[in-house]
Length: 240
Image 1: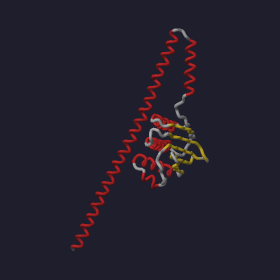
Image 2: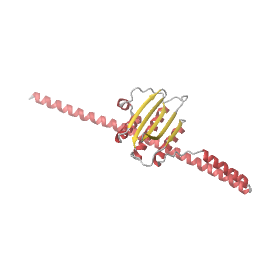
Image 3: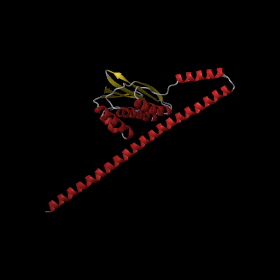
Image 4: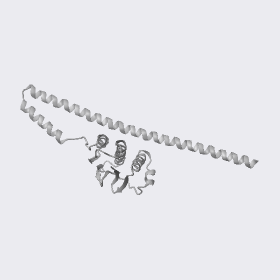
């Protein structure tokens, strides 16, 4: 009888311990998710603020240009007006900050993310062309690109001010598949690029890597990560 009571008590202790452990594990995961979501919101706010800053700059320059043109017109200096308009046209042709890939959603995510990266003194090189029809959804594609660039920015921010920081993005068609390549500078040395590497990358970076892998797997695609001296590259291929 005592043995039965002892076994019952021991079983109860095990159950209670398991429940308590599960509670703390779930709470820890919720806390980590909350931090991750806060990081996303902070990044989104920075992106929106950067867009507003650019728009304010355009508006300020527009008023300056109009004032100068009006001043010439008031003095009936038509030749000066024509010359100034020609100069403005040349400047507009030489400067095109919009990224045009052929996909509106990709244009938006690349423009906002890379604009923020450029504001953090990270050198940007982007060449992208996306076909009109894709198997992968715009949302999934933006999740991939957004996380890759966010991770690249995060790695660059860990570098010293004297070190060269860069992010290179290339998107195109290769072997009848959508090819995505994002390379960023880094001072980290990563020896394991498998699931163990992903699981060890906690926080925003780790969540981003898992989301990317889940989407690539969803479309039966291919992903390859390479850690070279001073750079970390991710290559992804998705069926069209």
